[in-house]
Length: 106
Image (tube, rainbow, N blue to C red; front, side, top):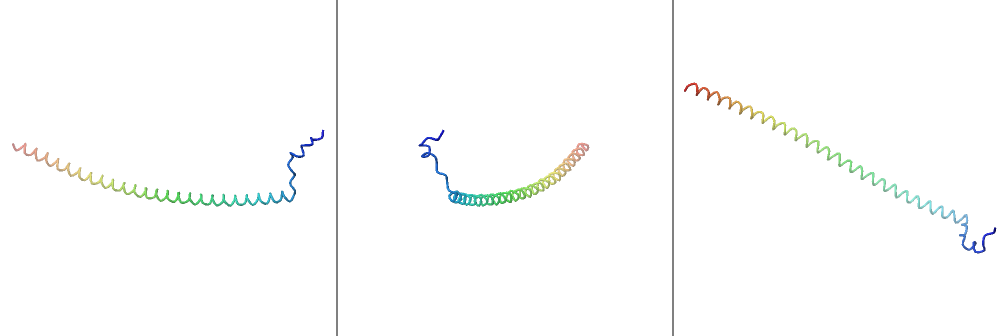
C-alpha cells in the first residue's frame, strides 16, 4: 500500500551529500579538539602523579633516615644503661663485701 499523503510532511528531508560532508568535517573537528583536551588532561594527570610519587619517595626516605637515627639513639641508650647497670652491680657487690667484712669483725 502507498504511504499516506501526510507521511511526506512528517518524514525528515534527506541530507544532501555536501551537507553530510560538512557535518562529518565539523564532527571530526570536534572529536580532534576533544582528543587534544583529553591528551592535555592526561598529561596533567601524569605530571601530578609523578609529583605525588616523588614527594612520597622523599617522605619515605626521610622517614627511613629518621628511623635509622632513632635506632642508633636507642642503641646508645641501651649501651649507657648497660654501663650504669654494671656500675650499680659493682657498687652493690662492694657494699655487700664491706657489710660482710664488717659483720665478720663484730
